[in-house]
Image (cartoon, helix red, strand yellow):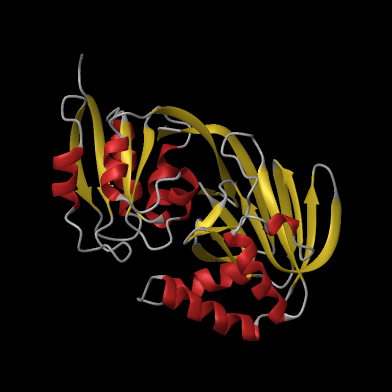
Length: 293
């Protein structure tokens, strides 16, 4: 039986575990009878995308994203509608997608999982031409993601402080929302388009989200007094946010959101400036995931 060719793409600057000697851990725990592997390190933003596309062109069995949600996004975006699978080793700060998969932060377990996993087709999403694997959206979270990207400090504390700062000056979004089933207008603090269920740090934003149902879980956070939003924190931790009266929660495969004020949107935690209109669409079973679930 021939060995399967895989490439590890590692972000050496990702998350609080940047000092981990990932090459030594891989060498110690990967099944070398199963895999012929190589390790590549990213040197700049977007480099993971280039390395992943090279692997696709060379017919690699899988590309393993070693990093946070941003690294997973860069790698995964290059694997959409290809035969090359996506694997994940969490090395970031938030690790939302890894939490959804139950991998969490145990790097050794994640490596060992590659030795026993199988291929599972999952959905991805696209927002104005940008792919996402886990969560996208606009509003307060997108503004925080954009501001955090401009800050060299990463991790939970800088993110939390940015959230507090932005929430004090945040202006609600007046949105026109259209799906295949309905159309309406309303004022919201956030519009979350979820493929996976977890933001990061084990905060569950979309408890009913599935990766292979061909639908997004939409979480609209309604306009209210700022202090009431802190009531959503325990609900995210106990996976009951969809039951909150502050939340409108539903499923759809496609949604267009018009925000005349403009601002920011994010895909997998990476913030960008956005046009007035953002179109989100599910791409069913569009990527192969290495999973033991």
